[in-house]
Image (cartoon, rainbow, N blue to C red; front, side, top):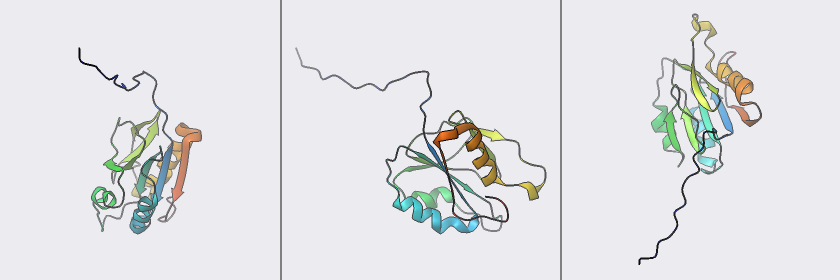
Length: 147
């Protein structure tokens, strides 16, 4: 008989896995700062990073491609119902507001007035309300009052 080696199977449970979340807010001019920050982070911190940029419609950027060049972590666009995974970088889509609820991204209705559009504040507040102790907020730069 051939000798077999036991296989370590993942621990599947119905309980969600708690992942500390580092929310990073910046105005459209914060690109260099976020790239420097990601380049200096270990890819195995056990935390998830969520980048929230206050949009500048006159300068659209491909944030996923730009940020992916500066970190070995997986960089993805956050989407409705997407669970947060450790050692990943999430970019909130421009012109969409998301928050965290029980470790999952959740869509937020956008304000009617563009002047009240504050995606950094919205996301930071959702972290304080829903993530509590596992929340860290970093503001690299702000635009007007957002952040």
